[in-house]
Length: 132
Image (cartoon, rainbow, N blue to C red):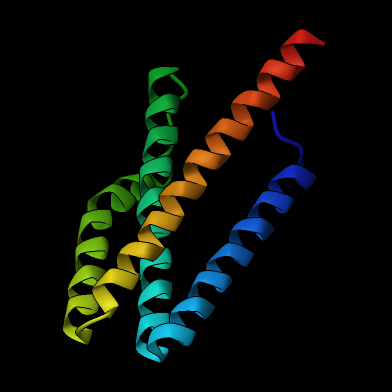
């Protein structure tokens, strides 16, 4: 299990990477590209948050730890709105015109790369804890 300090450190590293990517987009293609990066990062992060809340909710239901009705509304709403959020953000990036769609996808790729990084780091922490 990750400590609070490890979680905060990883979030800070991710935020620095996102700001750096937005800065690179700004330098190469201007404010529209930078906005597209932010749009890609935020919409993808919200989509992943909706998925994570739903998985947590399903875990509670399967453990017979019956969540309250308001504990069920948020994860289900997150699952229902995640697709329109990401599609709406993509549509917005397309309407901004070139080079915004490419930078939007760069922001999306950054979030998924961060997710893989988090999963690998978490797995290494668990293996290290197991061997000690």
